[in-house]
Amino acid sequence: MVVEKPLNIGALARVTGTKVETIRWYERVGLLPVPARSAGNYRTYGEPHLGRLSFIRRARDLGFSLEQIRALLDLAEDRERSCDAVDVIAREHLDEVDRKIADLQALQRELASLIGQCRHGNVAECRIIEALAPPK
Image (cartoon, rainbow, N blue to C red; front, side):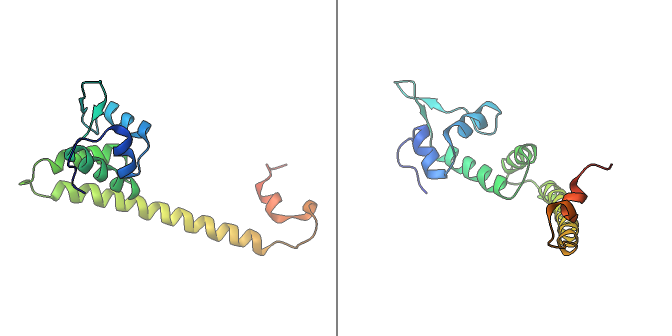
C-alpha cells in the first residue's frame, strides 16, 4: 500500500490490523521510530512506518521474538550486507519451532493415551482425572 498522506495512529492501526496500544508500545521499545507530530500534536505516520510495522507484524506472525525482530530490522538496514546473520536468526528460530512441535507431539501422544484408557465410567474411576491429580 502506498501512503499518499500521513496517517494518524488510528488509520495506521486499521491499515495494518494492529492495536493502537501495540503501535505505541513498539515505539516505546524502539522497534518503531517515533513519528513526527502534527500541529495538533497528533502522531503522523508515513510509508516507512507502514513498511516497518508490516515487517514487525509478519515476523510476529511467524513467531519471532521481539529481540529477533530487532536484530532482523537492524540487519535489513544494510542492504549490501551478507544475509548470513539473517540465516542464523532464522535457523535458530526454526530449531525452536521444531522443539515446540516435538513437545506438542509428545503432549498429543500422552493425551491420546489417557483418553484411550478412559473406561467411560464415573468420574471417581476416570484415568484422566487420576493422571492430573497430585500423587497421594
